[in-house]
Structures are given as C-alpha cells and as structure tokens.
Amino acid sequence: MSEAMHPLAPHHLPGFIVAPGETDVLFTGTVIFIIALLMMLGSLYFWLHSLPERIAHGASQVQFQLVAVLALLALFTHINVFWVAALLLAIVPIPDFWTPLSTMAESLSRMAADRRQAPAPAASAPEAIAAGSPLSVNDAPFSQVRVVELEAPSTPPDDQHRVPANEERRP
Image (tube, rainbow, N blue to C red; front, side, top):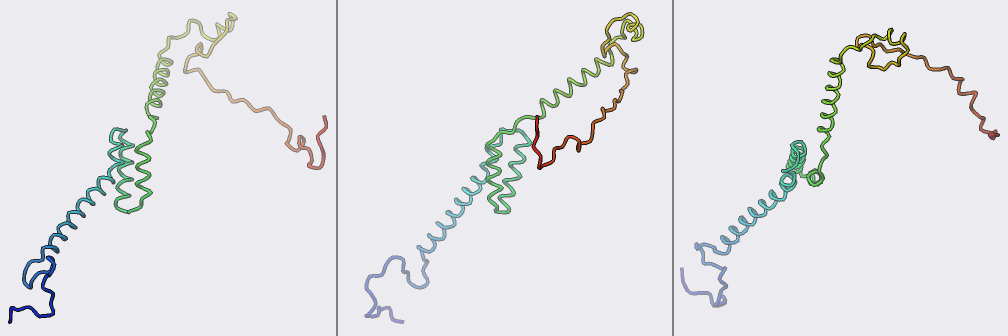
C-alpha cells in the first residue's frame, strides 16, 4: 500500500483520530472516567442511603432496628416511602414507655409484698365492732377478705323517659 495521503483528504487531522492499529486514547480515558464517576456516584448513593441509620445510631436499640429495617427495605425495593419513614423515625425520638411501666410494676409488687407481710391486727374485727371503734380495710386479715357483689338498682325502661319526636318538652 502507498503511504501517500489521498489528495482530497484534509492535511491536518484532530488528535482524537488515530491511525489504524493504534490505541484510541480518548476512548480509553472516557471509559476510565465513566467507571470512576459510577463508583463515586454509587458511594454517594450508599452514603446517602445510610443517613437514617447514622442519625438513629445514638437512639434506643428498638428505634435503631426499626430504622435499619426500613432503610434496607427502601434499598432493596426502591420504594422511597420506606426511606422517608426511616429518616422521620430517626429524627423523631421515641419516648421511653418501658421505664415508667416497670417502675409501676415494681412498686405494686412491693406494696403487695408489704400487704402480705403486715402484722396481724391488735384486735379481731368482731371485737373491734363490739368495742365501737371504726374499722379500715387493713383491719381484716388478707385471707378473710371477700368480694361482695351488689345488684344494680332497678331502673325503669327507657321508653318511659323518651319524648316523642313531634312533642316538645315542657317544664
């Protein structure tokens, strides 16, 4: 083949046009740039996706686990509502309901234990009644306390109290 250029070909070619068999530097650089850009965008995406978990890291264990589950659901299902819910749950602190409830339960168990271990009353209930002194609930031994069911007073049927719709109430 002849090395001479065709007479109609331009004499000055741009730098990105290479001779046959040579390495295309522009294409290679573009591929490397796009791969690096995709890696950086992926890192940014995962960093942004873990934002609710990083915010909720100092919160309670239950709140952190809920936020983590919602963030993973959002990551794998691509449903953005889960991510927004995780972010809102991470920002809003959940109040501690367990501590007051456990304190109340401990107090009630201490009160029940004190009630069972209370000393016997000085005088039995019949003797106190005979003496005319007032009685309290604590005067009766725990084993002798019984529940008495009372009947509700009878009430007239509702029809007797109703005023027909076409009549007015008069005093």
